[in-house]
Image (cartoon, rainbow, N blue to C red; front, side):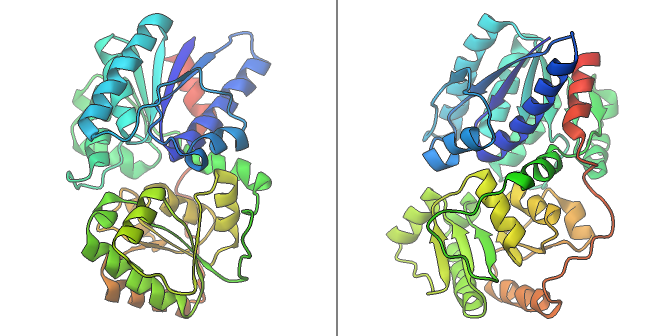
Length: 362
């Protein structure tokens, strides 16, 4: 069996790494070999946001690197489709495997489906119910044309059932979440970021979503709140290059206890997650990773696809409202930054093995 895996953004590198490990383990113990070819679209191209992930997680060099980035959504997706189609015609795989909700995800799925190549979507069924988010469009369309949908949670399965997927010729499975697999595996290899003196107690924050960075009122409100919170507890921000440029251009000042560092690799992020007291983010993946490391999370968005975290009290949505951000921080502080786990939401850490087994048996 031959699989072509399409990736392009940081969270996808992590997911692909743990599934590739499952493939390697399978090949070491079975005569029924699985060949995997990795296509990196180049959507994340910064050294610290791309290459470092391959190096740290020992992902082999991509078989194809398309180097497509810094374009509009339409131009990027269209060019990716063209290049991926050329690869698929050459390689003739049995499966096209995609992760998450990026332009790379949709481009790969569309290219394969039009060539009648089976498509598998990992992290299927997630919904934020906000069609203004490009990620929402990408995940909905990818789900609709996939042959097998690997859902990370029961809520994701429920979403698909409500959308009528019982009437669509596709297979829905619930293997769990591959990010849980990754967190469990890579925690043992965590590395402290270089050239930074971390405080004993600190908050970990990331800000990169367009709904915040492209709206100056939102961005200013968030950093006003962070500056205030920083007076009580230092905040470490691995700063996305795009966010950094916008802050500088608009002269948005950062408080003295806001510690901005360059983007870090996954192993450094795992270290920061393990050591921090609280996570404040507009990232989808980091909300979930906070839960894996039993850290409370304040989400700087108006909605989240990880609704089970909200329902169980592990995560709080505050948007860009300064007062809500400050009030939520005070509540978490009064609870001594404790996260009380009620139930396991994302599987037992064997999701990648279950995904591979399903692809082989399909």
